[in-house]
Length: 446
Image (tube, rainbow, N blue to C red; front, top):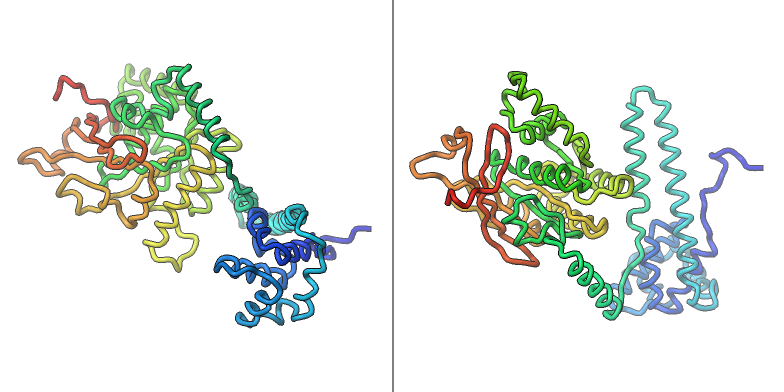
């Protein structure tokens, strides 16, 4: 008869854990395949965690792990007793006859670890659900994020011979050729830019940088609207700065072409009201998702995975990198932003969609044309990005930037400063400030 949850021993399989370690001692090449299934914390027994970490350390230094090198490593780390002592180490090679079934045993260890993770998360959620001071919706969201994260690192390593890759690539090229598509990625809606980029490509990290108050949110939102409202692409917009209502007011202002100030004050005419309703209907039909909360990097990863799986989101915008909250406060800001850029690039590849992240440029860049080195807080953003687009507004002769900002319509430039798979250059746009709307610049104006 099953006991209560408190009486039950957490799921584990001691024989499988010993067999995994024994297989790695018999054949050190087994380490490579084992790592794709399990991490040290997946082992239930602390002694096995210590031994596994020691084996990984040996392998990473190019030392073939065996009984002698393992014992020496544990003695050096002063963890031999915690690992069970000499007798336990010597007995591990008797736990399995060969390394042939190592991956099978590793999957058993992984499954037990997943079960323990689910039990822990559900137990914590059940306990916290009794606390009436907690918002149940927030608790549900946190639990969902933890459930997504518990399986996040467990991915199978993937590699292919070039014959498989070339066949897949030729098939892709044939499909593109037969469809006669103008763009292979998701177009931004600005034709001059899309001719150079061929659209935003799956798996790529795109950075849009601008000085404060230059319109980076507006250009990102315009692109997202072009993709979702006109192309019917499923878009998610993570706003770490503006509320969902503020974003929606901007969207309606841009779509209806009504002064955003008049919109907020309710000072629109009867005819403009018709335009608002028409624009609202177009937005209503668009597959567009907005998340407007303070987010850590972990929150963003979990939310992105959830939207990709549940809503089939095709592209994600993040506004903006500098507002992502730190999970670990001990990291220096430069190190944290470096972690963020690497993680966002990895997330784009894992989800196989473009991720567009907005970023501030240094204020010092106001005096001259911005370049890649002006990206704020971390040079790794520049390195990790597949594409960097910088928003620029040249000062007109005799006018300060403040004077130009008072003008309703100004010329701006999208500087394609980095394009890993294509040319770089500058695209001229017109910014209609009352509508917070960017439009292609008529060539007759040049």
